[in-house]
Image (cartoon, rainbow, N blue to C red):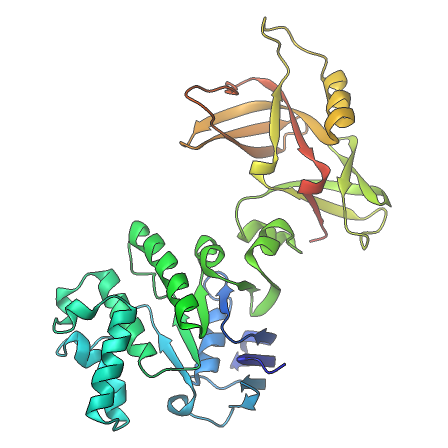
Length: 376
C-alpha cells in the first residue's frame, strides 16, 4: 500500500538533544490522524519535518511513496495551519485566501473561483470583504483553513490550530473540523496536547513521549486497551492498583490489598511479575455495606455473591469524598491498604438513587473484562 505520509525510523536531533527518536508511522489517504502528547514530546517537530521546515537527522519521509528529503517546503504537496493563523491584517478575507494562488501566478478567473469555493467550504463567504481584525477567533481560524485548502494540498498539517480559542468555541470547532475533513476527503495530520480533542476528531492517534511513539491506534482502542501506564494515564482518568501476578491460566490472579483477585490479563504477563492493574473510574461500581436500617452487612459474603452472580471482582473501602458534577457523582474511595480510587456513577432520575455519603463503608467492584494489566 502507498500511504499519504510515511515516516521510516525518523530521528531529529538538535545538538545533544533528541527531539524525535526513531519514529515510524504510516498515515492513510483521507485519514484524520493526530499526534498527541505533552509539550516537548516531539509532536510539533515531527509535523515540521513532514512540512519541510526541519530536516531529519536520520530516517526517511515519504509522501505518497515519494521521498521528500531534498524537496523544499514550498514544493511539497502539503499546507500547514498554525495556532496563530498568521493572517495578513491589511488584506481582506478573500485577499488572504487568494495570496498563495497569486504567488503561483494562477489566472485571475481560476483564483476567484477557487477562493469562492474555499470560503463556502468553511462557511465564510459573507465575510469575504472583511479584514481579520473584524472577525472573531473562530472566524479567523476558518479563514486560515480556507487559505490552506485553496491550494488543494494532498495533506493538511494542523499545529494546535484551536489552542487560542475559548473552551466552548474549541469544542464547536472540533466537530466542524472533523465534518469538514470528511467532506473534503484529504488527509489531516493534527498536533494537540488535548486528549479529549484527539479522541473527538481522530481516526487514529499516535501518543508520543520523549520523542517516541508509545502507541498508535484508533481512539476507542487507546482508551479501552492501553499498552502502558503512561498511555492509560494520559488518555483520560485511570485508577492504578499495584499487585503481583500469582498465576495466569486464561485469567490472571493478582495479589491486591493482601487478597487474591481474578483479573483479565494478556497472555504475555508472566507469573510472579510485579504488575499494575488499570481500571477506568466509570468501570467501577460501589455497593454500600449498610442495609436500610443502617446495620453493617457481611462484606465477605456480599463479595462472594457478586463474584458468583456477576463475575465481578471487589475490594472493601470507605467513601472519602462525594462530588456532584451534574451527569455523574464522583466518589473518592480509600481502600484498606490506604490506596485511593475514583469511581464515577451516573445520576439517574430526579434524586440520588445511589448517593453514598462520606464515611460510608462500601465494596468497590468491577467486571474482569474492564481491567487491564500493565507492566510499566
